[in-house]
Amino acid sequence: MPSRRAVLATGAATGLAAVAGCLSSRHSFGTLETDPDSWRLSRFDLQNTGHNADATVPDDPEERWRVELESPGRDVAGLVVGEDVVVAGSEEEADRSFVALERDSGDVRWEDEDADVAALALGDETVYTTAEDGDVAAYDLEAGERSWETARASGSTTHGVWLRFDGETLYRGDDGRLTAYDAEDGDERWRLSGYGASAIDGDRLLRGNAGLTAYESPTESVRFDDGEPEPRWEASGGGHGTFPAVWEDRVLVGARYWPLDDDSARLQAHRLDNGELEWEREFSDAHVASPVIVGDRAVFHVGRGGRDDDPDGPSTLAAVDREGTIDWELETEWERPILAAAGETLLVGGDAGDVDLVAIDPTDGERRWERDLQGDSVQVASAASLAPVDGALFVGTGHSHVVAYG
Image (tube, rainbow, N blue to C red; front, top):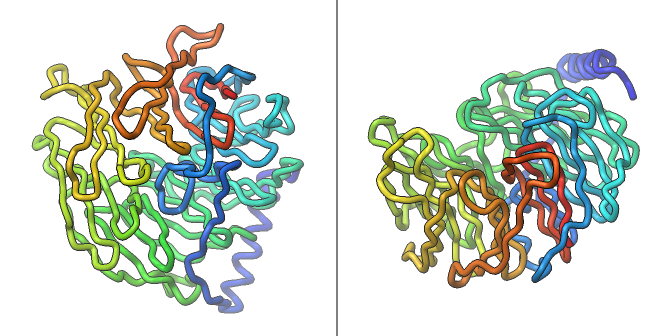
């Protein structure tokens, strides 16, 4: 495996040559093919639905294997699944903090001792990583060799890190910017300042910022701030939004408004074609997670507590129909759980005070089964990432374990 210094030097030389030649190339937003037997992005697809619609999960799953990444107390925030491999990573430079595991057995295919992983995206033969400090890198999926790595682009990560891949381009976002990279060599294509949580639907890129913005496809690569995407429409707002989730002809986004002492949060539905606000639901003293789209329902979590010792009501898991009407609500003790769905099953990875892992009927909120993520080596467990594929479920935990259920 080439050293970090060598990779960066090669990348720098390539970048200088490109600038010197004033190179540019046409570019448009791509599409990512999805299938029921893989989970390639943190929210499954580029629309951020969080729903592997054609997959099924077992009715009474059993633990098949468990691997500890040897990064105690660190979230397995990066988790993607291919046909025969599970790739997991945590934000800690320690042994086995970034590994590729054989999907059937959990055996280690390869590992990198010099990786810091905040998010992952899976291509056909390559897995892409990003770190909180701004690095983006590409690894060969079979052998684990690092193909390229960028220099640090941002250290602003207060609200998390996101990585999207559309087959040709990587989109890295944090709370300070959204940057697009050529997936083949890591060259930067364009950059937008501001909150970088994004989704792609057809020829639109949607970004949750102080409100919601839809962008046209750019026509060329960025060279000194030329060629960035142009806004198609903007929906203004007063605070940070969550990443957008596309629901057919609408976009759902959770928004928290300033000033912070107002402490209100909203789930909003905007029209995809022009950004017009269709409806919103407001929740006091709360934070609203981006929903999972399951058929004719959007399921989301309203978290209360954490900073407030006397929250205005309990945390709830809720489902809304397309008109914004609450279909069902389930009281919980979670604060910021992880949501995903497969087929007709909603999966919730708990984070505190309630069940570690639960399967829920998305039609009525009824709990189908529950599982304890603790294992033998820890006393407190939580879920940091979920990846349901056809016939199996993979969980990254908050105590550095990867667990396979089948």
